[in-house]
Amino acid sequence: MNVAVDVAVDAVLDASVDAVSRAERPVPRVAVVVIGYDDAAHVTDAVRSALAQGPAVREVVAVDDCSTDGSATLLDRLAASEPRLKVIRRRVNSGGCGTPRNTGLDAVTSPYVMFLDSDDVLPPGAVDALLEAATGAHAEVVSGLCVRRELPSGREVPWQPRLYALHAVVPHPAQRPRLVHDTLCVNKLYRTGFLREHRIRFPEGRFPYEDVVFTARVLAAAPRIALVPDRVYVWHVRRSAERLSISLDRAGVENWRARTQACRQAYEVLLGAGQKELARVARAKFLDHDLRMYLRELGLRDASYRRAWWELTRAHLAEYDADDWARNPAAPGRLAGRVVLASPEPRDLPRLRELAARPARLTPPYARAPDGTPVWSEELPQVSLEPLLTRPVGALPLAVDAELRPRAHGTRLRLRLHELYGRLAQAGPEAVEVEWRHRDTRGLVVRTTAELAESAAGTWSAETAVGLAAPAGLGAGTWDLRLRIRFREGVSREITAHALAGAGLLRRRAVPSARHGVVLVQPYRTHSGALALRVAPGVRGVVTVAHGRLRRLLH
Image 1 (spheres, one colour):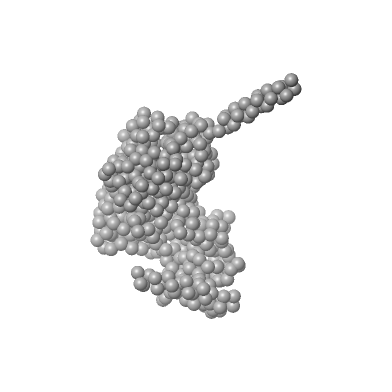
Image 2 (cartoon, rainbow, N blue to C red):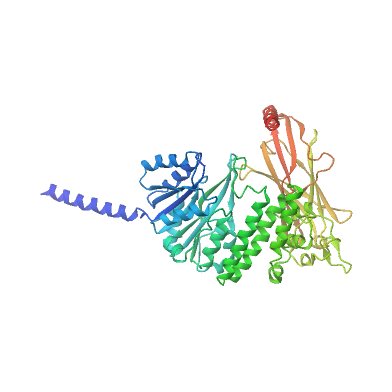
């Protein structure tokens, strides 16, 4: 009798445990659409990262866009052992990303869907974090943090981190206009029924930047949106790849034409849906992000590209109205846009590159109109800089010239801060905090502080030593220079420094070192004109640099 009772009790306990286990087990509710074309080297990694999300993923729909490199065969092999994987092979290549995403979306049977590119991955826990937020907040869309991972270095840069600092629920997109800036479709989970009810699809065919238009269509439908600070997408950036991604392949002017067209359509979609505020923000985003990014690289292009780019940009900006320009008129993107619009031909490219930097730098000359009003230049007096007179000092586009002097007796960094229409003298610059940030090792920073001394012609100068021996100084690798100017009354401004290039200042030098014997030091100017530094200590560092240079010469 006691044995029977024990067996009965055990059965009840086992049933209870099974019930709890089933209750805790995630319900398969999510589909992941993976698209790829001739990406056999990466596509299975992407699919596996989706399958590895666990039981919350009901299905992975892999759409092969008529690959010729064996990608589809690899996917078929994986599907043979993975019942959740469905492979769709398109018979004709679409020429873009929108059509295969639509193909995958049509095949989805799950309540929720997200998108993944073949050369990227989903980090562990991404789907669970998004799904929990979607069900908990009754949200049609959930968006999380995407990180751009530079390969092969592994350096990670968060995408739009301001949006994803905290958990949040946004009942209507107009309540968080910053959402317009996150144009990615891949770091989001969508309720499938929401997309289908509103007939939200990607542009078909060869349409670069299709996610810009898709995101606008999503926001135009006014979904309830949840935001999570979790890492939900890893965007792999392969700058040395044989075939660059659309966002990196900016050498041809057609890329810029496609981007302006996508931004124009996004604006029209939002405006047509009555989302006037979001439409205005979309135009502002173009100035602050897209325009500044391409201006930083414009000086690297040939004259033919620059003329075509300038013409396209002026035509696009001519569509802006007075209200578009009146909003935050001192913002760097708006100032740069007004310069482009005011000049029929490309001009002032080095100065525009500095203004397009992050943070912005407005370099001399500082011209004035006959009535004393600050203007861009004597040639373009119609571009007024008067809004700078009322902009907070902590937000001004300050200009600091920097030069690095590697010497056997010690490397010195010299800085010169320029006056800006009297604003700095009024604020009282006192000191500059110098930070060298290692580009590939997050959190590795070397700091010094130097006093700013007023000098002639409305400038302030400072000088500080640069150690070239770890751990106290700069070790091997690439270092970016960041400055923080401190003013009276506790005000400060973080900026980068304009790299001076005269008299061999950016030449590689071998500096004697008691620790390493010799250190190779290479100051250089980034695409945005800022000073950065490469350091290669010791004989091994010298040999590595020599081999790299030889490979480039042979190539």
